[in-house]
Every structure is written in C-alpha cells, then in structure tokens.
Amino acid sequence: MIEIIGVRFKSVGKIYYFDPVGEEYSKDDYVIVETARGVEIGEVVLANRAVAEEAVVTPLKAVIRRATNEDFAKSKENEKKEKDAFDVCQKKIREHGLEMKLINVEYTFDGSKILFYFTADGRIDFRELVKSLATVFRTRIELRQIGVRDEAKMLGGLGICGRELCCRKFLGDFEPVSIKMAKEQGLSLNPTKISGTCGRLMCCLKYEQDTYEKLLKRTPKVDAIVKTPDGKGRVVDNNILTGKLKVTLDKEDGNVLHVYDVKDVVIIRDSQIKLTPAEIAELKKLEDSK
Image (cartoon, rainbow, N blue to C red):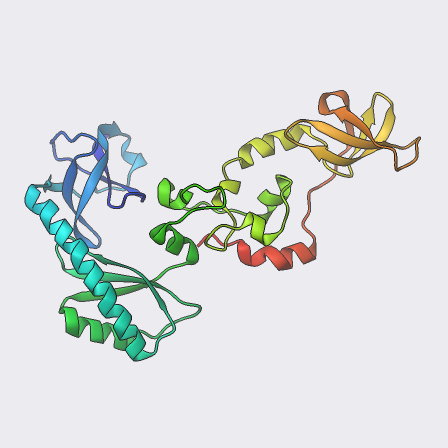
C-alpha cells in the first residue's frame, strides 16, 4: 500500500495523486506541487488515504508544501496577468492574420510558462506568433489547439435543459458518446435535439445508457417476432421505459394494433437496432469525443 492525496488544479478537472510525505492534509486544503507543467497550486479533493501501489502511477511526485497567503496572492496576480495576456494574444493573432480563435490563457504558478488555448478548423502555423508572444512576455510560450468539447468546458454556458453545462459543472473527463446510444434510447435523430452547445452529441446520453442496455435485453425490439396471449405477431413499436409493446398479429389485418406488457410475451426472433447509411452520413460529425 502507498499513501496518497488527490489534488485538482481546476474547479472541474482531473484528479492527480501526490505523495504527502508524512503530512496530513484535509479536503479543501491547498498545496504547492510540481507537475509536468511546472510548479502549481492545487486544491486537495482527496485527503490522505492508502491505496494499492498498482492503482497509481509510480513514482509519485511529492507535495512541496502547504499553500500560504502569499501563494494565494500570487495566484490572484496570475489571474490578472492572464486577462492582459489574452488581450495581447488577440491583437497578435490579428496582426499575423491567423484563422484561429483564442479560448483561454493560463499562467503556471511560478510564471515559467504561459499556455494559450485556441480552436481552429485545421492546422495552424503559429511559429511566428510564438516568437512575437515570447518577445512581449519574455517567458516560455506554449500554444495548444483544443477541440470544441474542451472549448465548451472552458467557457461554460447553459444546456438545452436550462442547467449549467455538465462538462463545466462536474465532469472531470469526457466519455465517448455514440449515435448508437441515441438510437437505442429511442431519441429523435435530429442533430439539433441530440447535440449539445459544443455541437457534438450530448454527454447526458451516456448517463442513462447502462439502464437502457439492461432494459433492451428483455424488451423485444421493433420488427421482432413474438408470441403473445393472442397468438404470434410482430412488434411495430415499443416503449422501453414502460415495457409496453404494440404488436400486429399474423392472424389479423396488419392495421390492427394490440398493446401488451413485455412480461406477457415471449420472443421468438428478436430484431436489431441499426442505423441506416443516411443516418450515419448525417450524424457522423456529431460523434466526436474530442
């Protein structure tokens, strides 16, 4: 076993593990640690605990020290610098005529590096821009191109549900979301109804997928052949959540529908939920985990 604490550097972001070096830290404490980006200040979200050594990537970096009032003041000062750096970079982008959209700027805690996050439709040659920024700030400059989902996470906003975006509120990592999920959940495949603010498939499709997969194991799909109390028939519609099926019986006119509960029918031959080539072509651009 190995003792660790969990530290987060953004309000909603990944949790990184560090060696507390024998010190006791509580949730909501702030610490100074060394990361791949340099020295950073972070919030303790997981207090001291022992975990299996194979559960973490070793060797762990050690916590440098507990954050002080001077560290908090420096962090606030960096936030002010970030706003100024954003304006300067915007001006330089226009001067160089680059087709890119600046999203966010971050100073590392020790000021050894400034990171500029941007989006663009394609690859951007920003070498001259980096030189210009390095001349102004006289420190290490790094430009990172991000995807539209990361852009939404950084900028925030409201979803179609009227609540704050999940990625901004609590999602630490993005999980892959597929068109197949929307199809299995019986949702309209209208892009405007299943895509989020970022223009990609809504993250909330992932939340209920496990439940739908369990229900689909016992619910006959559309076009399935089933045995009902009134004879054999074909499923023409189903409500996965209520367990109600609409069935046309072989012995009757196909326009007559009977409603049965899923527990009252036996599946003779199940069907498959498939996307048509047209649906795939129209919606493939929404299926993007970046």
